[in-house]
Image: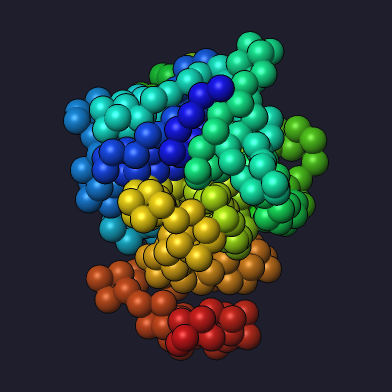
Length: 397
Ligand SMILES: Cc1cc2nc3c(=O)[nH]c(=O)nc-3n(C[C@H](O)[C@H](O)[C@H](O)COP(=O)(O)OP(=O)(O)OC[C@H]3O[C@@H](n4cnc5c(N)ncnc54)[C@H](O)[C@@H]3O)c2cc1C
């Protein structure tokens, strides 16, 4: 039997950040992870916004592989729209070494006083008279019970902690991106930009990305909507794309990975004695699938809420819902808005995507506002009005 104030299931960015902020005020925090090594295997495109600097979580910059100036978005006919890093969203600013990034975050939590157990998989919740009292886990087939006042589900896209607490965590195929990615060496890429390729035959319901890590090394990946996918399709489409680009075709893989990202609406995130953070809370951006920034933003709020709850010795849903109120205020609205954008853009055929890119390629993005953008588009192409209607509604609320 191991005792703690808080047990965090998952040592990803959401779990480590939560643990760090909870431990800072003296709470006894234990992180468990089924992995043998923090951050390994890497399942990520490794793009992140520079907003990450605001959190001052890192003691070194070893996790930064490359700094990029912005994003280039290509429509199916090859029209390119350029955005600065600030305008480009959650995945553009730095290309990182995700394994080092996760280790640095876990190290910050450990320095703040958190403990960590690896090769330790949560298998259920520990309950006493129906109340959550910790987790049941196994380490090398040995069953262990970890008693804690608060359980944090930071167990990623496949989260089971939420389900064990009767939270509906079910992801419809329409709300899940199936991904595949190579890290290719000996490619010719522009180090200053992250590139995104859109198109219904290129990546149905998703996109292909090229994130440059070094002058001749890049992550080249694809995400397609699970409801529009068939077994093996993501990798097949990615291979086709690479083979049709000579500057990528000459590359050889250093890494090949497959994974999934939630592109869903956020769900309930608190129960008595329990909090969900990061991908487990469906906090990834529904447009891009980028979830690192919100995992950290949400983790900080969760850690601060937990620290307060421990001071007050109150662990009920009402006390913990401070976390839910704060993440809704900080990034919840944006996630909901971006879900509507995702739903709208999913209905666009390639012709509409080309039309949009054609209208936007010379748009002055310094004056960026969703409504301003829509007005400019509709003035140029009145036929777009019906297609963009859902976006007009959300940009005025
Ligand atoms: C192919 C791909 C590319 C992506 N690219 C980007 C990108 O470029 N930029 C970006 O911002 N986001 C990207 N994402 C999304 C990003 O990786 C996630 O949003 C982010 O990892 C969420 O962090 P997290 O801490 O919530 O979960 P995770 O990082 O998934 O961490 C969850 C942890 O929980 C552990 N765990 C799970 N179940 C248990 C259990 N039962 N017991 C113990 N431990 C458990 C896991 O081992 C893991 O360590 C990508 C995702 C994929 C799949």
